Length: 146
Image (cartoon, rainbow, N blue to C red; front, side, top):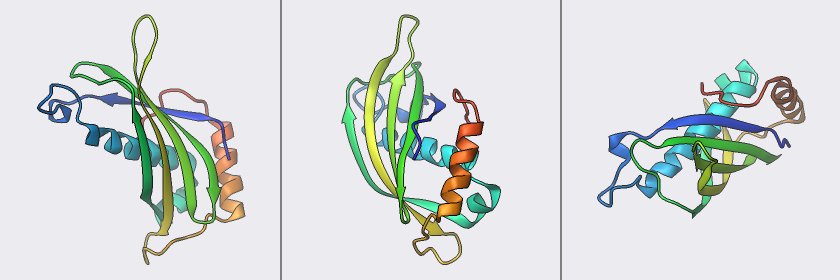
């Protein structure tokens, strides 16, 4: 659907750190959810944001390096495609460094769009896809935390 990356800075909190002294693996799931939902809210029409919710169906995470308290971390997500009520995202979480970035994790995830009232799957119609694409194309990329 779009190759436009949406980026969101992440603050590593002390509560993210596990008994091994690095960010717990479960926090990466929370970060993926945060960036995907932030992306939706930033680019979808207001009526769609109000009437639709997203439920995670599947995450496949490849961990590359640990993150630590004090790290500057950013999540980059790309909406790869939409099919019916499903959306497929690719997300990279990286540590930013003065001399270049280090990839911490790569995540492929799928999500189901549901109606906010009935909580039943809701197809992303062609018109919403077109509007969503147009909004994404019209907005700049970069740090767009919402």
